[in-house]
Length: 356
Image (cartoon, rainbow, N blue to C red; front, side, top):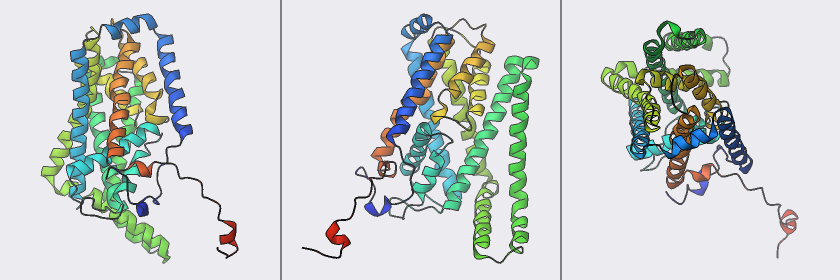
């Protein structure tokens, strides 16, 4: 698949990566780094990076990618529960392709990319997955992620800060918990509600939309019926997000400082809550600002906050952008991201119905 997808498949609606978007990402990155260094001590940050322990920074890199290896396995298992058996290699490639797009575009558009890739015509190596099923798995994945982040960040926050936990963070936890409760309630009530809604109109499109919703909800309700798989994906979800805490903790240790693991976990997972809906490509600027604010909040810490944020993001964003991009194009998904060439004007003779 390294040469791209067949021509017939390149006509699918796709997330296009235009040059202007990449230029905007570059400008945003430069501004973010400049602002971080301006607010901190640029000289101290540079010295801290130069003195960093490469073994601990390397271990942080390994931990980060182990989280994505487990994430790929969880994605494969959730698809299998919905009735679609994909190889680990293909499932992980689709997942990384989606994360690559989300790293370049705002609002997690990589999820739409995953749905688009999985609905491609089926082949021996690449089974096709209906939109309702893939979307249902992605929603289930999001619910697992939010639950794991909420549990871990609240636990770390209480351990690290106790009664000093900021009120705005408590509000964030409660709002997130409310969203999860509504999600669970929807799983219980929507199927019965769909039957009632069908009586409102006999229009074909109305019924098609309700049937799609029913299929989507049915996919979401399969996991609770398989407790073994359910326990496995819950444990996987906790590990995935613990990796974020471990990466920050190792980076700070690599910079020669010490931060309790609970405090590192509180910072990393609170950042993850704020990055749940990235307003910029890959949360650029948004993530760095929350990291810096929370580390400063704890900073009895004798280390360069700017250095810690820059090294952490170099691992979790910039190295991942290169790695996931390489996987995306090696898997043959690059043609789905290429801008469409402008249509060529028809030849005058052809327009007149003539020829040579």
